Length: 217
Image 1: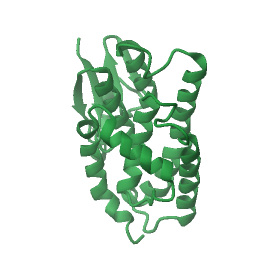
Image 2: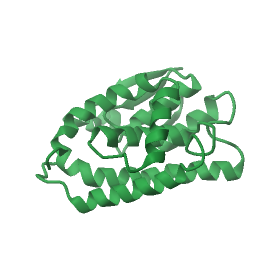
Image 3: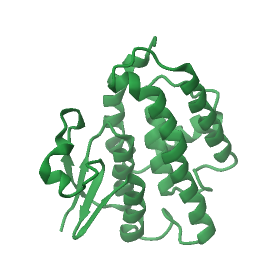
Image 4: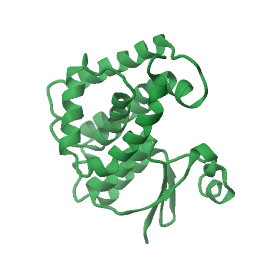
């Protein structure tokens, strides 16, 4: 049976799932939901996911949301080996730490800075929120020191999750230049991740148009 993915390309969490699927070689049956017009509130979708959030995956009898859980599930079930989501407890813990870091700190701080202006009518950005985002990027810069990928020198699901966020920051006018490890890693992701431009770039380009609202704010 096909794996259904309810998604919206604008969403970095959705794009992290698309990147993971490319890496493991899984074809997804993509079902676009327009959150701007409240399609996620339709009864047939709420019946699948009562939290009415994207991404939402349906794989047989499994209905799963929360993007990072979907990424680790796809890597665990469909990857040819455990390199994307290592079975070694210590290495897996490092991957998990970065997934939680993205969810609770890095992407969270971007949303607090950018989304009030981009989507909710706030007139000006809060410069203190930008400072907090750069603080988180500084931590990421340190995490990336001394190796090519997020955890060591092999690609893991942490790279897919983090690059979906950081590439969004880049097109939102966030100056990444002071975070040299981040910019070098981002370049590696763009050039080295399987299916990067197909899975991530269209959504990044879409959000870049909306992110113009941040300029001069």
